[in-house]
Amino acid sequence: MNITKLIHPEGWRFVAIFAAISILISLASQFGGWIGAILTVWCFYFFRNPKRTTPLRPGLVVSPADGKIVMIKEMVPPAEFELGTEMFTRISIFLNVFDVHINRIPMDGLVKKVIYHPGRFFNASLDKASEHNERNSIVMTTTFGDLAFVQIAGLIARRIRCDVNTGDDVIAGSQYGLIRFGSRMDVFIPKSINPLVCVGQRVIAGESILADFTSDEPARQGHIVEAI
Image (cartoon, rainbow, N blue to C red; front, side):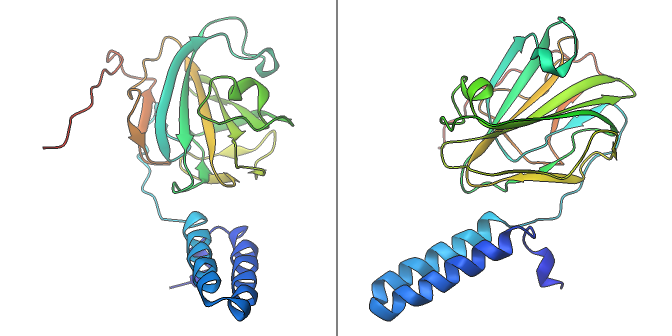
């Protein structure tokens, strides 16, 4: 097993920093050293890089992030996307600090635009985070139409990493970026395409299906099933 692939490359320096601080603290306090060790293990866990199996049937939109669907809303996409004034459906995925934070491409296609905005750091589960928080948007064209997805920094997140550029050909399920320490991902699909997820559902990046351009299935409905 190649240990360097167990976590995202950006994570190693943070694990090293957490470990070094933990060692220094342990010299003064055994209890503090144990707390530092636990935080170091959590840091390693946060940057973990699990393998994913991506369904490849044409038309599928796979989730670009792990997390919980917190909102599904119809709206005109931001003007900077240059997607016109037609309504799109925005699917918002909230990532807590225990979710995998590596982001993946939702469909095969061509990157049309990459748009970065500095901003504030509201709680990423709030609707206003989409407009006011630091964010990085990707607009792409596919065989089936255009879509967009947005990395949004959260209350704790202070760093967005994006490894694709305008003009890149991308493949569904491939890794393209990372948001550090709690965040959100918004996915914009045409209104004519029904979401195949519902609010409250948890999704897995690169595996869970958010929508299908080739399906006429109605939008999903869901309810919470209480534990017995």
